[in-house]
Every structure is written in C-alpha cells, then in structure tokens.
Length: 160
Image (tube, rainbow, N blue to C red; front, side, top):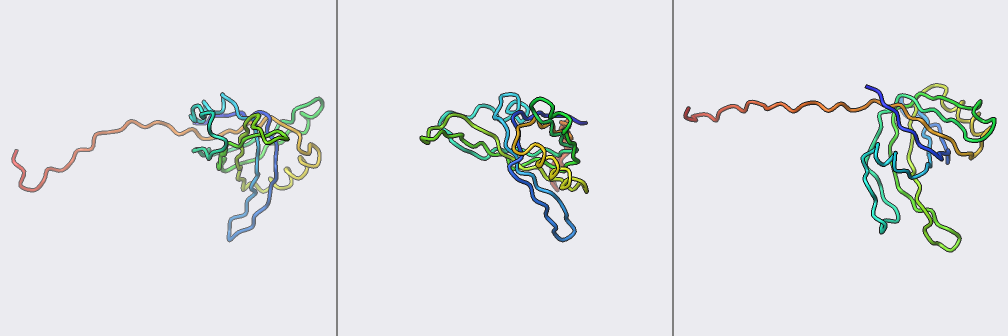
C-alpha cells in the first residue's frame, strides 16, 4: 500500500555521493517548514513551547521523491528521483539576529540508490539554487496487522 506526504517550503541544504563497499548512494540533507499536516501524518503530536530543538521518531520507506520548485516559471525544473528512505528527522529553532526563537523548521535526510540521483540533483541545484520547493514523498505505508492469540503450551504435568 502506497501513501504520500508533502513537505512545503523545502530546500536542499546539501547532498553527497557515497561510494561504500557495495553500497553506492546519495544522501540529501533537507530543510522544510514545520507544519501541522506533516506532524499529523507522522503522528508526532504537539511539541511543547519549551522545546527549542529535538530529535523526532520516524522513518519513511520511500519509493520516490518529487521536487517541485516554487515560483513563476520554475515548475519546468521539477525532478523525480527514486528513493530508499527518509529519516533523521529533527526539529530546529529559527532564530533572529538577536538570538530570539521566531519559529521552527524540520530537517531530515533522504537516501537514494538511484543511478541518476546525483546528476539530477546537481542540475537541479545549479538551476534552482537554494530556492524553496514542494517535496512530495511516496512511501510504503505500514499496514496494521491484527494480533492473534497464540495458544500457549500447557506446562508439563499440568492438570486438565
């Protein structure tokens, strides 16, 4: 079963190609708006005002990510990349010049083993730069399976 989640105000902070032992992949460091729809979708609930920053629980078994740039005439630069997972979610405070917290943003990592990922990201970043986009992530939704009562074996010597 597949589902999607949309991150608004998203931009690529950085990306890197990693060439490990048999594991070639691209890691994309992302930032996006902290939003109620994402919190609800990820089942994070409300974060109390006293929290300036925190790690968030969650991982998406992604199949694709689509970057659609915001702004006039930029939608032609939309890219779609095969993805493996989206994880490492962090809530980070946004501070003004005086150090006062003025808002929050979400940071996370996308992992992709798609052959074309690095080339597509390089072209995208050259054309869009750090411009914001809508990021749509398609992922496999975990189905809730009914729990069954396991029949426990009778202890040896138990009376019936």
